[in-house]
Image 1 (cartoon, rainbow, N blue to C red):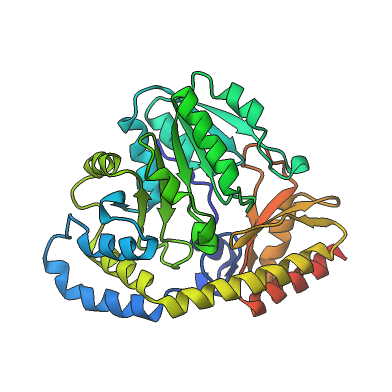
Image 2 (tube, helix red, strand yellow):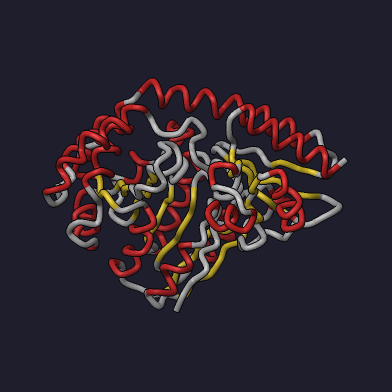
Length: 357
């Protein structure tokens, strides 16, 4: 059975339909670091090419050491994977039970992975009217009989950052109901101080998922990891095949963590460009952008057209946005845009000006 994967970043298909090359499209649909990968990553990848005559290092030792230093946690707390999506697909097989709850709107792969493992997936839907806040009393009721809870922090696609206190309350509710917690921090590199990693490593019924795709700008390599207590990390490690993470990706990951300058510049650039883009979008009376802690903004179209229509009308500008109609809890009036470079963000606002005024 073939799936049509409904994600941002589908530049190849769009470029073919427009008769142009992918690099001619400004892709606002995928939230990848606009500064691209670190120069150290490129060098490390080139250096690693001669090692391709050997099998990859299954201990992932070098990357685990780099992660250990980066997060101030022991190497035994990390499980390296072929993108955090591999972990999402492996987790249901590791856990007893068959009933999952997803705090939505959220990443579509949770449902796919649960379907594959014949789990029942239910949604705890947050509303834009309420700024995607979580009602703890309602969540407590919803967790009765639930074996697995997925939550994304910052929220995807809304960019909402839940405080330590909120995550602590969710942890506590999961403990009471015997629910395994999957805390997906795929975009947490943009606001690292808010990570719940220290809390989760002390918990034997929870895991943090992290992606190296977004912040470090290497989606084509497929690299992610889990943070959990050491016993769980070992069990998770045993789930994947022996060489699911390739040598080039392992070298790239270690180098990405070491380029402190590139990472600092990324944070500064995203923070300032996100504010400018937010203000620019908010100037259109038809648009309502939502505050975000990540490198994307969720935007509601209040009148005039659907997100799908807007997406179509932006294509002649060679701009691609993410229609969010497929996200549980969002209507066809919502779209998401990545925070890109100043020049590209300005171009988006100009094109929107031509359509909306």
